[in-house]
Amino acid sequence: MGWFAGSGAPAVAATWVAAAVTLTVLAYLAGERRLFRMAQHLLAGLATGYLVVLVVREVLLPRLVEPLAAQPAANLLLWPAAALVIVMAAARWLPRRVVAIPVAVLVAGTAAFALGGAVAGTVLPQMAGALVAGDGGVLDLAIGAAALVVTALVVLAFLHGVPRGRLLGGANGVGRWLLVAGVGGFVGFLVVSRLALLVDRLTFLLSDWLGIA
Amino acid sequence: MTEAGFRRRIVPPVLLLAVLAAAILLQPVVAPDLGLGNPDRSRADQLRATLDRLPDRALVVVGMDADLGTYPEIRVTARAAFEDLLGRGARLAFVSFSTEGRAVSAAEQARLRDAGTPAGAVLDLGYVAGAEAGLVRAVTDVLPVGASGPQADAIEEAGGGLAAFSMALVVSGADLGARSWVEQVGTRLPDLPMVAIAPTFMLPELQPYLRTGQLSALLASVRDGAAYAEATGATDTADVAAGDRPPSALAMVIGMLIAAGTLGRLVARGVVDLARAARGART
Image (cartoon, rainbow over all chains, first blue to last red; front, top):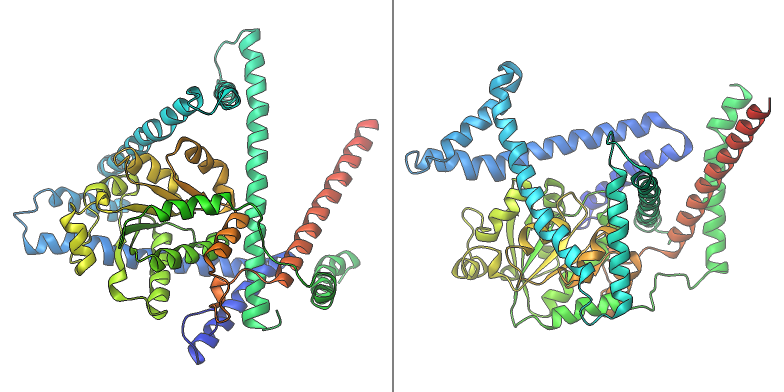
């Protein structure tokens, strides 16, 4: 059995296609950019096609079109939804003021859920977790307090265009350096993550395509 | 071709091939026992302890929102978790809130079907649109139109939402991952245990949730994934499928060599730039 489910000619062909595309992407390491760009376009095209099929098959048809076609009077709330979809689809030809309505609904709805969730699910529980020592002892409390201080300093780093005194200015500078250190740490994790992906692709090429490891 | 052009176009591929050839020849001699391993099993044990607390024939919702680019890093771990859960008699229901996650979910369900998983053990809840709003809606209504079967009936009887499940396993990587589940679902269903599998780059983002107990368990590094797969015996069988086995030792050696080479090149370029800047400042 190859990398892809099943066996026989289709699996072998799929493995060869995957190997060819993998090599095309890895060719970037050797400075070959045209093939890499071709692979990027292929991915973008496939992703867009997949997205359209998914949205039509799993969202628009079963949740909008079919209920409206079956019981138009019973699904009154779906009519404005259908209108919003039509406006979005025809956005290119409609005046900006009309298009702004569904865009505003989308942005406001997403922001409201995301912000509310971030406050209720992350900020408050994390602050509580940092403040309450529980049975963790003094060390846990110290770590929590340090986390709060670092958070406050980094938030201060985002103060732009505000009149600052010497103390606030110093805190702002420290916060900025802490932010840079945090980004550095994150990049370190990202590198480890990407290295694991490179090893996975190499495993595929060596084991499943070439069969030498 | 100029000398500079020759250096730029020909030398790197030749060097790369030389490194590959050297690694293929030397790895079995120099490092024959190289493999993934992790003596620290605390994270893996934490996940297994959470699974131990599940009731018989538990309904487990799998929030499959992996990213196509990073899923290979956690694929072995995720598949080990599916096998572990199915082995304990749990029934899995896959749902996705991102389009990429839906693609991975469809592939994993097809793989489970091909591997002979009983039909009633896996339910496809499909793709839920609406990002965070979709997650909130799933709390009360997660069944897709036309869902049928014993598992769908059990969910329907328990209210039709995520509260029907004994546990949520969130496979992260895309924008809507474990953090979104904690923020949108965890705040509405605080009694629903949540465990997460995520790529390494998400570890700093998700670790605080483990500390506060908002996540019951988290596997977010290759090391922890390897420890869990080893603990479950997912990589022991000789006929394990290609995507289920850990990376080959040779691939790890070559990957490390490429990474070291790239890093060395970047450092060398940085040193040269610094030297040039210093020379410029003097003149």
